[in-house]
Image (cartoon, rainbow, N blue to C red; front, side):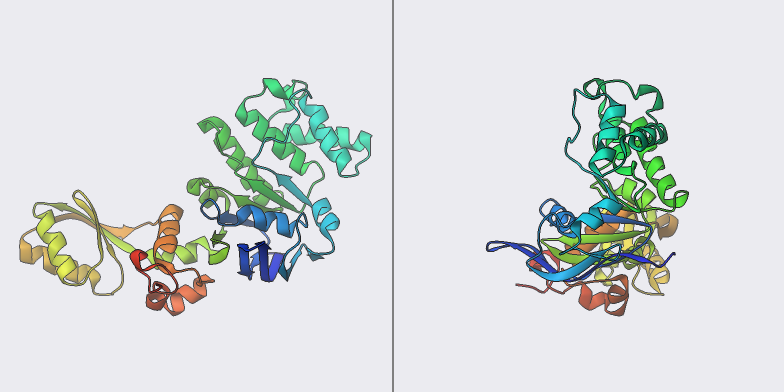
Amino acid sequence: MEHERIIQTQNLSKFYGPHMALENLNLDIKKGATGLLGPNGAGKSTFLKTILGLIQATSGDGTVLGHDIRTEGAAIRSRIGYMPEYDALNPEMDAINQVRYSGELLGMNPIVALQRAHASLQYVGLGEQRYREIKSFSTGMKQATKLACAIIHDPELIIADEPSNGLDATAREFMITTLINTVKQGDRSVLMASHLMDDVERVCDDIVLLHKGKLAAQGRIEDLKAIDREIEIHVWGGASKLEAAMIQQGMKVRREGRVMRIAHDSDELTSNILRCAAKVGAQIRRMHEYEASLEDLFLVIMENLGYEVKTSEDLFKHPIHARKVDAPGHMGGGAS
């Protein structure tokens, strides 16, 4: 079902001694594709280990596919496929037996595991290379093998940690297309952790953004991108004067040479820009609404929004106050 929830947490926290790795996470992740974002040290790995039942939460609760993360870790792991970022393959094994072995570790009958291994390797594009040893594989082929290991038991949820990291353009495109097909045609869910924003935006409809163990933002990418609406103008002649005039009028301007982007915070913005251009004698050759990328959104949230913002609904309710909540002062926030 489209709105079925696959991961839910309530005030989930994890401490390592005095160090806080996760703090009061309240997540509600629905079926489909969700990107798990955050800088290094944000708590992504701890979050994944916690919801898989590999480590115990310090406080709070959660469920994955309806199973309690505290008491039903084995049941959770039997219904998910995990593609780790780190090297988890045996270089001395050939691909078919590596994938078969992964199935047997999950409790599959050896004959069924071998049949599924053939099908899984065919699905990830390694059907003709399945009898080659892992040590002879390229990075892209190793990543594809890890994905085959993750899907051998036809899991309901695939957790892919940096699936396209280190791949060339061809292998990266195949990996992303395979994940998209898994969601769209295979009717499976994907939780994708990645630093490559373009890949996340292609695969995922929703994101969860962590920072310093806290939830910085959660919601649909399209909804969240709307908080960073801008008008882009291309200026010929008098660009510096126009920039100064717009800033004097209280507009927030980002400039790259003759191209400027102005925060879309008023219905009168285009008229105000044109008035400033007429006043200083600048020529605007082009004006249009700028299509923000996921990377733009990531930077806006990390630099401006503060750490207590929870969902896209919160951002739209209080767009001004949200930019001042709990963020460091040098980042435009109001925290000390």
